[in-house]
Image (cartoon, rainbow, N blue to C red; front, side):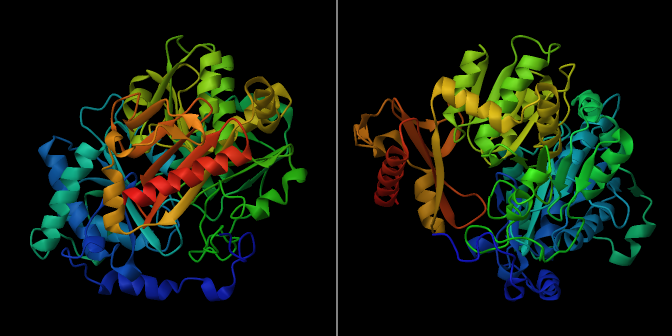
Length: 543
């Protein structure tokens, strides 16, 4: 159900009390006997809120100590790079993490006192730090991504620059909860007032090297020469200075329409449910930029840690993320002549099947994986995957010469790619997608969220093929039922059911008390709604 506040400026009464949020971060102590207060790594690290005692100082102390122990056990002894976004809990969590890293004599690098570091910049920085290095360097990004202002997040990126996979996070998670249970007795922590004096801490400029290398992955000259009028809204996120630096280095005609940094995110328009959520793929959260679409040749936005992209065109307004991913894949393989012919295309299994059709048309190999960008890390790092993308507007791809750029989602390069496409083809990505619809048919896609308890989510996660007794779905014969992804045979943590002209997937959220149903029809809106209804009925019976 769509809230009356959706797409409207956030009223003062729903803004977070930042002072209370930070006070709770330090005062609330988690109880590991309560499931929702334990350390829990989802698809993008540990997330929670201090108000519910799910993201607090003790969590960060425990996670960081566990991470120090893990690094030592696997021989990672280089620099720990630490970046934060603009959420209110990010700065306190960085301080807590530094206390423990420095207490364990781990060499750390952070940006200067007032700076923020986007996720893709951190991934790029880790990869660059490990080139020609005799030690292994890694990093932490402290961010809950697009989640509401009350939330905090802590994500570990390994020496390949990408988010740690479940084999690593399960070790850290288990040990962190043991440390919490033991009352933090094993935590080695430096006093806050000694952080700045530590010999193990360095300050660095993460942004400039990233920006100055952008011309190795995007045709920045083409964008400049086309003199496109570009609008960008950082949505109060960590990459504001990235766009300022891009203008300085490349001289683009780029307007930053909102330069506000405010931990309440009071400038946002509310999302579909009336909450403040910096989701650059949501037409409600993006309402302010969408209004400016006619003013620019191309416009775009990012979420607070800049790992997601939101593309606004004159032709269609805010592009559906699936539509833009399809265009990006087609364009890159058509224009990156230095790329090898045998490169694969990575997509999550809940992304549109229009991607499958386009990838097949250009004779490339599709690599379908469960939800989570971590599944693309190895392929992007070794250069076997040219592109990895997920329906939630996160993607990355290789440099123009086919070498690795970032192994985490990079909303900055996806935004700049939209400008490159518009500059070189003289039509925006929305027009190109409309051409795909004429060629392959129209895709009707929708995601539905519904409340689910911890126990219900666990049941959904453990569904098997045998649990589906029906032979048909939305009046069509069921062709396949998957509980493991076709690309890497990894568990979906739910299931996907396909027919000749549609499919649905159901899975529990790793970060919220909801389950998600994704569905797509190549027939009609009515067929899509029938897919969703039958999928919901199936899930309800199962959990």
